[in-house]
Length: 539
Image (cartoon, rainbow, N blue to C red; front, side, top):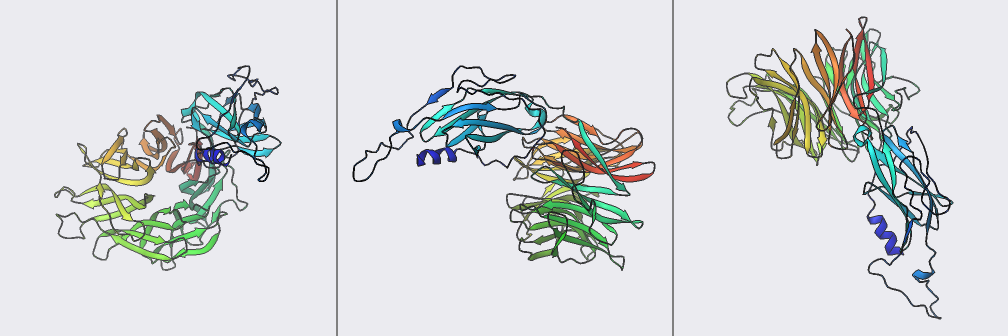
């Protein structure tokens, strides 16, 4: 029996905890041990099968009067599934609740289209609960749910139950929420429970101040009692945010000091948006633009600042989960082998992502990349996470015909490597387009997606779905008005416009929730007043 339990556990995947979600529910149940009387596509087989047998590498034991007795397999009472309850149809992404009523079961498991789900939870009284995942429109159609109850080597298999998914089309707007007048949102991250942490700035006494707020995933309502929290009394904004595995929040902000010099602040907040007392020591004269949390809860941040030799260098900050400062404003300067002077290129970093123990910095480098013409190209720079030492290869955005310039403004980890978003531009700078690129660990560009050309067009945020799809946010100037866009690419095909009419808008950050639905944040200008704007887009 113990072996059988272990064998079951070994085959169970480790899924993230499922959360409650608003579903349209219908049930199918049977009280006589026969097939579930389901609505929709539920099976109507008269009698579930009873599977018996012994696990491998086990033998029967013979009882003796002196040693007591051990029951044989024949003496075990087989478990029975009495009912399997699932929604008749699923209309929203999220965890699909499954309830199984049993007799005599010690374990309940299920598969969806042949893939094992997390083991069900015993609620007592023979009732077991679990969930099947739904990732929105990509799962539209019929799916097969199969449930098995076991007791030692004995098992009861319920007839297959069909589950139908019919969710909104990708790109549909679920909700949108404005921020206070004079506010803007720069970045967004999503909690494991599907809520959004939104950072940027809020105008107080005529000047922008660094700010943070939390929005509820299902309707966008603000969660914290304080509403939007101002993090510093000085002028500035939060430019980057990252969640630790424990739910705390790293923020990277830039503030103007009393002497008018700008200084980065890299601060750890608790889950409610309040300072914990952990802060990275920094000096004035640099700017921080991106931050990522490591698996232990530490952080690495990236930005730029003067080298002291007339050029700009990428700057890196690193702090451990124990609050130990490792490096502060450590510089990196692009210096190709053919370039004798190491201080010719101006280098900037706008984001950082951790993948496989490597910190990848997305940014730009201005210099004579071809040895003749002064051009701006996107760069993706791998650094050792713990020391900040440069690794190979450093990736420089490729030229494509007349499209010779560009920048990488955001990055995200992808199952196949690191995906970046930014823009490409013609050599004379008269035309731009949003560009997405995916690089593997060797530095090879294995996927590339240029968007349509426009007078102004640039990608600002990127996120990756559970199926490897790519979601990008950005700005495209159409008819003289800049408008924010959300794009679904690489297996996703949709375009969502952040605003309509003559109102100018921008999308600066995107993130996907645990069920692949999209949060996008930025700003909208209406009647001459700027407002932060957050939106939830179906996918």
